[in-house]
Length: 431
Image 1 (cartoon, rainbow, N blue to C red):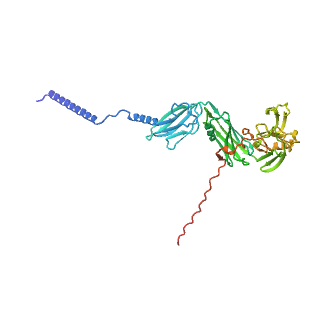
Image 2 (cartoon, helix red, strand yellow; image 1 turned 45 degrees about the horizontal axis):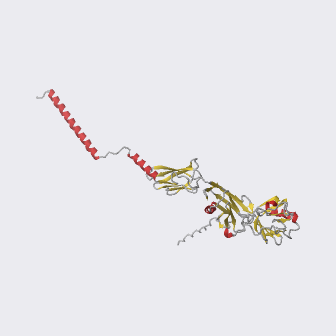
Image 3 (cartoon, one colour; image 1 turned 90 degrees about the horizontal axis):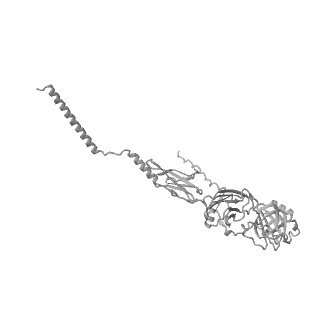
């Protein structure tokens, strides 16, 4: 017979045993579960994203290479992505001047579209995106070279109405001796005409380049010249700099023909004879130069001194006086001008020091008629043209010595109109 005490003890022992067994079962179940499921490291997505961004950034390449120095100014900056797509490229100088470029439709390549500035540091930042939506940035810096000198140019004429023989004269502020640089600069000038005609380029010196039409300009022609020397390798460590835009118009065809044998000068305006002037040309010791001259400039009064041409003023052939109504036609000092002292010889004999002497009235009329670029054609003389003289060198240099030029149309023709198709007649239906 159980006592109350013994029964309580037995019940307590049973409860303890049951709890111990349950604990063992629970512990066993937990161990069994952990052996089937592998634990995962903390934050797996952050690590994978960081790796993908690094791969995208590493797939971006730059040209010039990062850290490059003395980069040529005619190069183009390029960014390529071998993985993902370029979504943005920003290129600037260190002073935040932008360098613009074009991104390819595929998003794989960006390239700048302007020359680089000299002695300048650039920073290029590219943003690339992957198919998963991850993005990354990559940056490169480089520095351009410092030129030995920069070369600029001027263009004449500009904003003028000129004669039919006027060439386009380009003067550089440094000698351009490198043959490759000379050839390359022709692509830096664009000649645009209202009625395009054949034209050509010719170098007359290391600093002077000319353009002229094959034959005289058409009357009324409008001409524009544009140049961009930025990024032009001028040779010998020099690089081009600056842009120029000029325009001019061709006036009426003024052509004067001075015959040194007949001592008569005929003057035409657009082919119509308007005057015949008796004149006196250069005497045998100082003959007037033959050839197609152009009017270089005009001056109402010129102080002419013989010593500038090597003739002492106090010699029998010397002179020192003011001369009026002067139309300048050669570098060597030949003019068509008033010469009241030789009126008796005009139309009869050549007595001047090389100029074309007219009476005061005829000289005044010719002065008012003439403009820069007009033709004064001297014929039947003994002195050949001097090819280095600006008065004659353009039209006395044979055309085969000129480099053919590309000429653009100022007013390109509109596209041809397409004829509208007549509507087709509706089919007839049997009734």
